[in-house]
Length: 155
Image 1 (cartoon, rainbow, N blue to C red):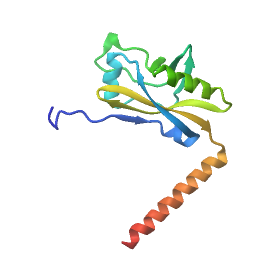
Image 2 (cartoon, one colour; image 1 turned 60 degrees about the vertical axis):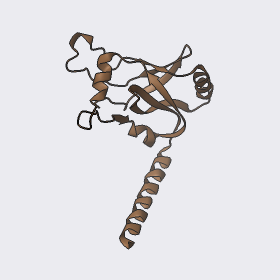
Image 3 (cartoon, rainbow, N blue to C red; image 1 turned 90 degrees about the vertical axis):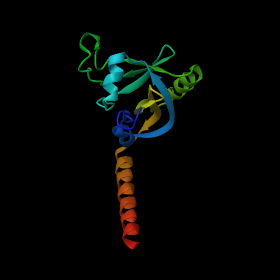
Image 4 (cartoon, rainbow, N blue to C red; image 1 turned 180 degrees about the horizontal axis):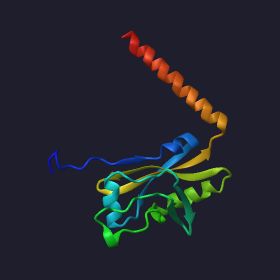
């Protein structure tokens, strides 16, 4: 494959998750997809905005992720928001399950990308932010941005 035909690296992030939650431990999980879903993902049109993960019967499932139907997929296209199974080691699933028993923790998808041809999903254990935490984070970003502008102006 030369540079012109090499596909771009697709990365879909859930920016809302970083704003709404304090992210703790993260995990990399494989995701079970159909062929047309993979082709649609490679175009970069999926959305993680309203998605969440659950542990059910020692399996981790992703709900609410929207993958639009592939244009040339016709009869092989599936429901765009169907539940999708995540692939993790049994020890990781058990550790996640134990930590989810704590009050206030949830499992949120953070980033979807391709690694060695396989679709991977970063998921994180998260604790919800309060309104003042969100305001504080915005203020910190603003001061950091101003500091960088001043440094850039000196040189």
